[in-house]
Image (cartoon, rainbow, N blue to C red; front, side):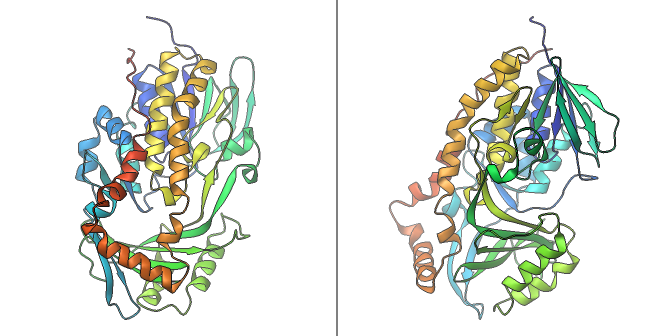
Length: 403
């Protein structure tokens, strides 16, 4: 068996891509360490779909059954008027095809925990810390942490999301890579005030959508807001400013919006960000590479963020194993294998927003009409199947596990 080089790998980020990458690296004989800025796992976030090749990856990890156990079980979505009158409804199976071929919908925090529990026994986690500086040498990367003693690793992988600090340190400022998609989104957990039973209710006004869906066996709910907007000037670390933006944007809205906003101050998992894509010519530089949203976020509009993270982590680890740790060869192969799926997901996201948050009353009516008719249209299978087709743009190649 060929000796593995560059075995000691630092991964920045403990959401989805980071633990998934650590799982496979450990399987192939590497020594991964994960550093996470948060003091513990981030439990919040919206429901996410796991589709296509990502389900194959989870199956090979032995985790697909557990993911199915934690599915949201959401049965469908209704679009309502200001007085609560239902204008259109659609079941989840018709709308996005979830449930077929092992596909699943799961809360982002639940998927993160599944991956953490699968790796915590044999992967080193450094919570409450982050990378302060990176210095590449001929033999490795010297990493200075905010709190832990400095260490040298053979490779460093950024799996730290859209606002990747790793990417900024190595590749340049975020502004060089971010592409604003014209929308913002905010999500937080709240009591199930609307007594929803595995269902989602959404209320549209032109360019804005507010809604809620039940979670964790209807014991709680998520509030979700999205709206069309030019790029805003704010500090993404300033939570109070983000809360003010959300409140001001939806002030005076009808339906149950005031009740949803009233729960904002108590939310422990408030999320607010632009719907944006990260576009880069290359995801690797020297001994540093990127995986998941850090390198190729397709935006929440694509619905493929978890898929890209799981598949990207699988391919990156597999190519490092196939190249026996030769990162120059492995990084190039990883980019070649992964690029078609990234391109497909990012292209799919374009134009989704105008149907999710239509910009006029006329477009809202057209969207509602399409939703009502979709189950009866002969091309419903094509429309429902498109996300699955995108999610299978690349296959999960087979890589031989090492001792």
